[in-house]
Length: 229
Image (cartoon, rainbow, N blue to C red; front, side, top):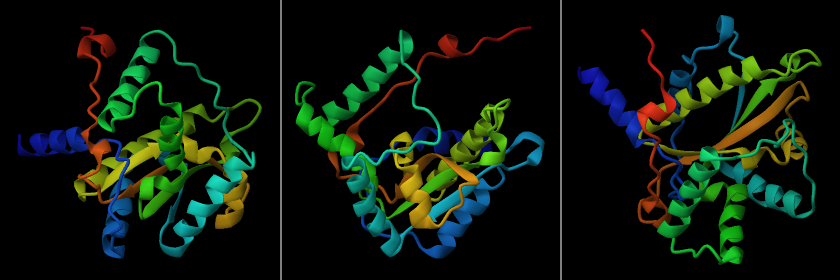
């Protein structure tokens, strides 16, 4: 039972962190986080992912480059951002956004401040580290959209964020970090053979920041899980 309680604590502690301390994670801890995440499951143990971990001077370079590219309209996405939130999914999205902005004291009608907060995505919310998650292009063909392998990448990402939580590190998964894929590949010297899915900012959480007070709920078990016997 002890391991169950430990796991539940880790899962329940994980949240999307949008403010970080300027304290970098040491190399040994970084390697431990990613070595643990490498145990994530995947179809036929194919492990279809590439993690590009950026820190130090390089992340400071990206903090300048990505916002500039976005402002200049240099948008390049490897995967379409065409999904629509409707019905209950839209309700959940609205509730989460409202919880975050309310915690920071940003009124719904204050579009300028909301936009400024959204723009912090592109500077990693001040995090000292970011990891970009890539899917090998060989899984994306006319007859195979790579959905199965993208699911593998998703399982890896969740395992990675739980590993971060277990190591006392906060994180925030961000699809916004996929908006300038071509520029990122060039800056990080990554081949076109890898397609950018999304990024995760991470570091030690700044618990004094107002955003840490944002509490999002979860749907009731019966709304999402069906048991059959």
